[in-house]
Image 1 (tube, one colour):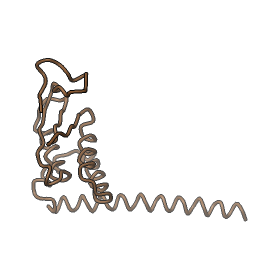
Image 2 (cartoon, rainbow, N blue to C red; image 1 turned 90 degrees about the vertical axis):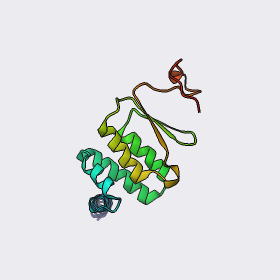
Image 3 (cartoon, one colour; image 1 turned 180 degrees about the vertical axis):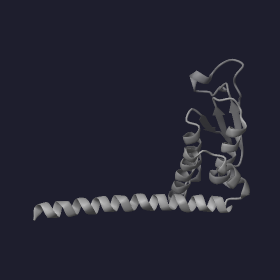
Length: 151
């Protein structure tokens, strides 16, 4: 009898986990449909279509978290860090984003999509820097002569 109860508890836990995962996938697919129908605008659809499937999945997960938790600024940051893991994002009256890679149309398109989907309307200013990092007071690795921008 104890063995049967343990098997039922295991089944119930596995069923609950499967249901939770299915719901997450379902929400992501609904968000994918909304983007593809143009609910976030035609430009967001175009930019989303240009991403790889893996990049689309990262965006959908971040968008799902935003829908569940609110917190657009947090999700904006997570979306940037998921697609650009080596980037640095700062905020001082506006967002300052440094990407270690050279400027490219693909990178600009990914950033534009993230801005459309995740950036608060009130915080629409984002300044981009590619390549060499700019100096940030209090961050010794970035403090180099002739490479600093003061705010």
